[in-house]
Every structure is written in structure tokens, then in C-alpha cells.
Image 1 (cartoon, rainbow, N blue to C red):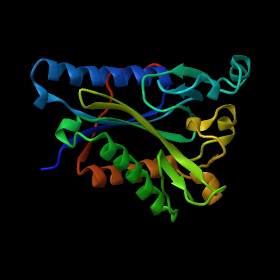
Image 2: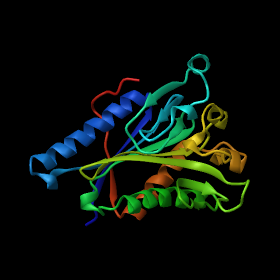
Image 3: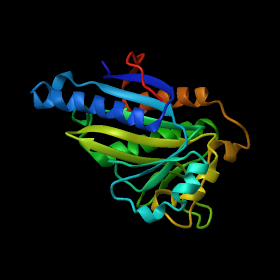
Length: 238
């Protein structure tokens, strides 16, 4: 019997509210381990779309935030310095953000395997749309033409946190994202490489609902789990 992962589509929610929700789910799982009840931990997968926000990981450089506070306010872009790995990235409308809260002790206690598996979910999803994607050596995320100098472009960023082998944060997949927002940062701290979106590559607006279903399907395949849909009963305030 495959492990269950409780799935929630949170719709369009503020970054802060969903960050707090992730922290709550992680705390619930880590507390079970502290209390000597690790078999009771639960896996979760959250999918969400955020209003415009820049997030800077704990190893990131504030210099990679290029636009001033005044410029960000004019465009209603929030900013958070957060507790995931990685550098700076953007979340916003038209982007699918995935937050797996998984107990890797019930899967594999290997962060390299976990990151490659998240990448594989997006690589397979892109293949459904006829796009050949891959990895860039020494860099996380999903890339198009990673080995062609000058044409490398990132379509999905990754950044995670792991506590007692419980994960949080995850991936940000540019579907219909306005990539002009990336002009305000050095994306993931990587200079001289482009950012792209599924819409830009296909020259067509893509159904987010359809992409979410494909992500869910490939998540089940790659992680060998069953997703169980769950409605979030405690209201998240935007």
C-alpha cells in the first residue's frame, strides 16, 4: 500500500499566511517525533498561487534584491527574508508554488534525492507539453537548454528547509508568470542566465488547473504515493 499524502489546493493566498501554515504543519510533525510517536506524522502537499512577493533564503545576499523599497511599493511587491535554503526568488500570479511537508524518514533520508525528485516532477510535467527540460550542473531547479551557453533559462526554482527530516518550502513553477518581475532581482543569485515561463515557451496562456493536475499525477509517480484531497478547515487569511 502506497503512503498517503494529504493534498490541498489553497488557491490564491498571501505568502505570510501560507508560510505560517507550513510552519504549523512542520511543528505538528516534529512534535510527534519529539514525543516518541514518529509513526503518526503526516505527509502534505500544498499548491498555491501568491500575490507578488520576493523571498530571500538564509544563504542569499540582500544585494541580489535590485529594486528599492519605494519601487517595490509602487508595484505592490512584498519582501520576506525566510528560513529556506537558496538565494532570492519571486512568487506571483500565474505561478504554481508547491510546498511538500514530507517526513523523509518514511521515504529516503537523502536531501539530494529529494531535490532531484522535485525537479523530476516538473521535468515530467513539462514533457506533457512537449518541452524538453533538464538540470543545470551545480544548480538546483529545472532548466531549458542548460548546456547551451547564452540560451540557459530557468522555469522552476527550488528552495527547501528540513527539520528532523520534515521538509517545508519547495518549488515555484512559472506557468503564466509575468517574468518582468524578475528584473527586480538577481534570480537565485545567478547572473547572466534567463528566466522563462510555460506561457512564454508555448506562446499561449496555459490553464493553471490543468497544470496542477499534471503536477499531482507526476508527484504520485515520482514519490510513489497516493494523494488524498483535503479541505483546509481553518481559514487562511490573505
